[in-house]
Image (tube, rainbow, N blue to C red; front, side):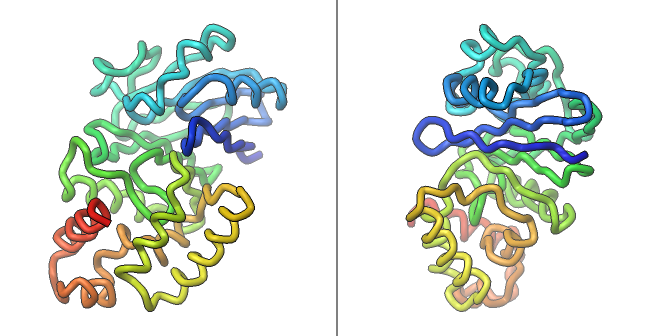
Length: 255
């Protein structure tokens, strides 16, 4: 059976995720912005927490961990290279390593850029990709610690995954990302349609994540630096895709 995944709104615009393996009862949590909503979701579902997967060290992804573990002891998994600034880890992992959540196997992908040693968790059989602040719905994380070429390389790793992969990202930024996307890709019919869908969901208070990777490939400008229409709009026809990506990220920073 596939993972049963629940989206948990936290703080003002964060998301955490519970991923439950029905075959074994194992339940993983991806990131811990705050403990309260997660503890409430565990009580509602009756699931027993077995693992906590940490994507990166920023406070809005780890601050609830101590309070959560006090009520729900679990194995904590995070990047070995970032262990010095993460909460104490029970399992330190590197790119290419695999982890198991019950009967489900996940692969670690280094997606450095937003932070150095940011990781994503990819569960191929479940078609689930937990990206936090790397690839986001219609966007990507601001480049705080890495370089823009590094972030572009990280996103290209994710873009190469199957199109039916479901992308579970870390924030509700999609409406703002959609406005920016239209500013540099205004004639994209798929983007125009998605913009309207996002606006409707937000008007109803409905989350806009997760999203399909195929949808991101068609509409997310940070995955489309090779697209001639975007290059033309930026005055960069024929430019290297990494340079185009860097320009897109710079424009988003100033949007």
